Length: 249
Image (cartoon, rainbow, N blue to C red; front, side, top):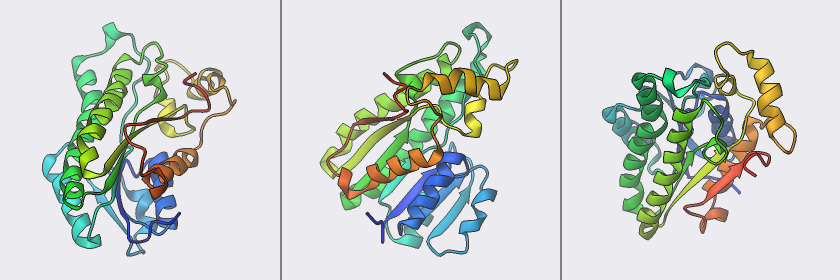
C-alpha cells in the first residue's frame, strides 16, 4: 500500500495524531500539506519537496481556499482530506458553559470541517475521485457527563459526514468518520475538570474505560487513516470506524 503521486491535506497536523499521520503518509510516498495554527514541530519535514506547511486559521474562508489552491498548484491534484483539527472541552456543568465557549467548540470542531470539506469537493468533483476522513470521537457514541458541547460537536461531525458521503457518492468521492477512543495525547488531559489532576484523570478515568486496557497511541489512529485513504477502502463510504480499544461497546 503506497501513495506515490497522491496528495493529501491534513488539518490539525501540528498535534499528536496529526503529526503521526503526516509522517506515515510521507513514509508511504504521498505528497502532504499540513495545516495548523502551530506548525513549528513540522519544520523537520520542510526539507522534502513532498511536504508543505500552512500556518493559519481554517475558519477564514479565504485561507482555506488559498491552501487548496496552493496545494493543487504545487502537487497537481488533491486526492484526500483528513480533518483532525479540533479542541476539547474541560468537564463543565452545562449551567457554567458560556455561549462563547459553546460557539468556539462548534466553530472549531464543525464549521472548520464544513469549510475544508466544501473546498475539497470542488477539486475532487472535477476529477471524480477522492477521499475525505473526518475525525469524530467515541464520545458521540458513549458520552461523558460535563462534555455536552464537545459531544454535540462530534455528533455533528458524524451526521454531516454521512450526509456528505451520500451527496458525493455519484462523484466517486468517499467520506468516512473515524471515532478515536481515549488517546495518549496532550488533548486528552484537556478533558479534565479544571480542579482535577490530568495524570490521575488519564489513568483512573480514561484508561480504565478502555476494554483493551490501555490508551490509544497516535500511530493507532494514523494507520487507520492510512487504510481509509487507500484503494483497499474504495468501497467504504459513510462508515463510522471506531478505533477505541472497545470503548464504544
